[in-house]
Image 1 (cartoon, helix red, strand yellow):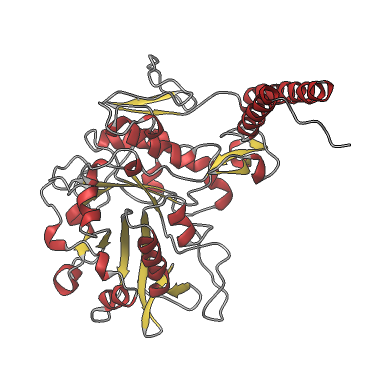
Image 2 (cartoon, helix red, strand yellow):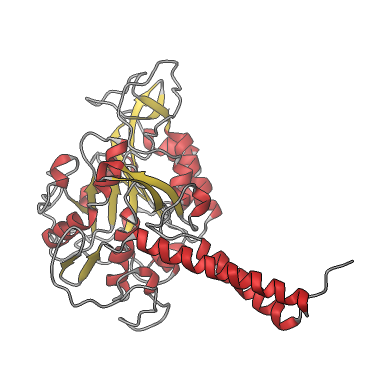
Length: 422
């Protein structure tokens, strides 16, 4: 005999309970997990033994694009995520037939980096095998044991992403060892990227604002390229990086707590000569298993560099192994920088399109705080920017969530039993 149909009121309640159950079963940052399917969108299941966190929990791996919420501001008002040595990918097979001997800085493809919200790429380019290659090498020379791929292949990944995402803007920073005539121009042309090129003649100088992201998208000037070789401005029309950006020291000198010295090629960080600021945050020797601990210390260094730069936000934050952290990682820091500067909220997720400064929506966490202490697990302040790391117990959140799931299942069982009695 066919089962009786559920009364409409019971059916509606059951549907609501199922929907709520699905929401509750989607874990958040810091919640316990046993596999990726236990975590919500933009999260993966991992651990951070280097920070003493051996139990699996949900860790963030996806950025919120600030321009998707707060639109139309000058490009230099936003903060973007950059991968250091974006091409130096663990597990990338050798293309030269020789086992590679070098350091690695990332663990997923450039395409995946861009899909996860990375908007800046650091690429080391060399002359090699009668072409321009991406190489993680030394002394300005690429070898068959330090080479990765021909540069055009990675640049074609960039072109594909820009083509598929017509409102996105990408910045490329080239550590430039290319000596072949017009070498860079040739590979960018071969990758069909010149149609997105932002012309050097229109780059602002003297600390002036950049055009709005809306204007850059409308004119299809969605690729910014900077080189470390100042001769390329005259020979190829490629912007010399330190004419347009301020930058702190890279490697170990750039991660000393409480210190943020400028790179020797750069003007002092508090200079008004440029309107873009690149913050490097990575050790000299990259270690994959240590990166989760290192990246979780970014809020404190962001505070130090913000102060050193005269209360200027980093427009670019460059890191190794960008997905590695003990929770929200570099993504949370980017969200908080963008939130405080673009709309006066603790996170970009609380910003509301078209709303006045300080009109924040409820995201489940307070948008105001009265604490003034600075600590690793508390609040870190710097001028108008507030960086906060959460100390809420993941175990407590998980316990509450499981209790609610149990109660909902009990109620659904009762509803189903009732429907067969009617």
